[in-house]
View (cartoon, rainbow, N blue to C red):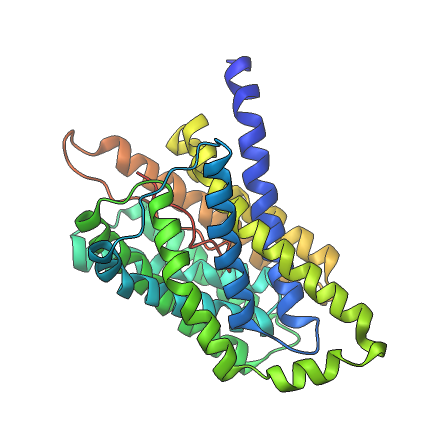
Length: 334
């Protein structure tokens, strides 16, 4: 038992560390510099994931993926576009909202996914899930009520992101059966197909003239250096999540893996409270704890549902966590 635990400890810690790093660095890049380059940051993450996946494959790490081909690319492209919309709206929400509040409201995506699955896949919604949904809604109400720095744009983008995230997850689960993607196939195709989209939208939508004008001033050299470092760490963290998620899943059970995903939200919120100068209120802390409890209850409900499922009946995987803004770049969990 202890040997199994020690064998799993490194991938679990690696997954948690990459998840926390990604969320905090994204918040830093998107809200603490003069220019908020969401599309450019997503392009860096996509490029970093693809480049490091190729490198890891070349040096013999356990990173295998299907080669890009026209039939699969054509089938998967709408899914990649929906991922791009999800990540962009998540980035805009994270630009305006603090990390704990973003984490609390992200739970509402689970409700949208659950009822979307019920409609599309005839998946069951159990009484225990309804309890978790009630906790999620309560945590969101408490969080919004105690949001001192209320920002309407933040809530607009957060609502848009919940809808886009649910659409992406359900659409992906429907299409993934057609292409039979495994492990890193999803990561590779998502990032390679969205990279040119992010680059094109960055050139068209983001203020590159102002960016170069501002950072050509020597007085802003230190800020430029921090911005570049943040972008590099973001790209590396995007790959790290892509690698550590299946590594963690392979060395633990699916139940342990899903519980880690639920438990990981609390340290992310705590680190954000300590790292960023956002005001901390008792209500905000309560909202985080309620959201944390809701995640645990929901994970437990899904694990019971999986255990009680009749043999030979397909069980849909749990909703993808959003570490990339959450990490929708995570491979499909079988």
